[in-house]
Amino acid sequence: MNSSQQSDPSDRPARLTVGVVGAGRVGAALAAALRRAGHRPVAASGVSDASVRRAATLLPDVPLVTPAEVLARADLVLLTVPDDALPGLVEGLAETGAIRPGQLIVHTSGRYGTGVLAPALRAGALPLALHPVMTFTGTAVDVERLAGCSFGITAPEELRLAAEALVIEMGGEPEWIEEEARPLYHAALALGANHLVTLVAQSMELLRTAGVEAPDRMLGPLLGAALDNALRSGDGALTGPVARGDAGTVAAHVSELRKHAPQTVAGYLAMARTTADRALAHGLLKPELAEDLLDVLAEGDLR
Image 1 (cartoon, one colour):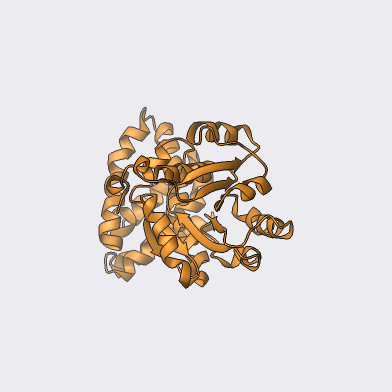
Image 2: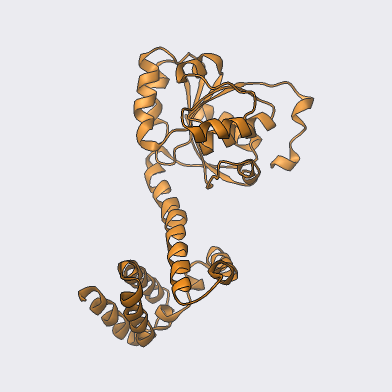
């Protein structure tokens, strides 16, 4: 079920009061999506100017209070703080008695499963890990993007249906991730999404240096097609000089990058070597061409 299939929330009563600890980009968007589904955001915490603005935009009329007060008011609490801050936050809330038995405590970290919520579990709370696989802007568009967005779910077996129901209500698609697989799952997402941004930003900078006035317009169709092909065909979508074994072209690339953007050379060489390995393994790169190519890449490391 997606957001377009949900009934009008005004047709049914709110079922859970919702609080947000850390009104960042993720927390505000998820609370707004839960409001759309018929739940009732009642409190949020946030101290930065950006948090205050986001709360005012996405959660109008929801008061900003202390984390302890958020937990006192809410049946379902979203802990949407940075990964490194999450363990200390959970321990602190549990030690102060802020967590109530039967309260749903939900974190949105990709790195952690429910183990990080052990102090809350000991306090009688119901722990859920719901990680939206999406980048967030801090604006209303984030709520719309949740439609069809995958969520990595980890929860005790008895809470699995509840976790899936919350995700579906927000318009998302639940995907079960075992506790021990969470770090690998999160690394995979960071490898794809975060590094993609870096690669695209570097590519645009190089195109500007080459005199291209609108690198975003030039790259848009190319990268859109490349992403679509990769999602459809995996390594079968590999193209370009590395996959073809054009060692001379790759050598020219490395030479130009050293002149104009030396900070990009290490990344280019690392990605080219990985691409060559994958192209070889899938029969796209001929072994007789790979030798010269790998020599070029090795020479690039030595300079």
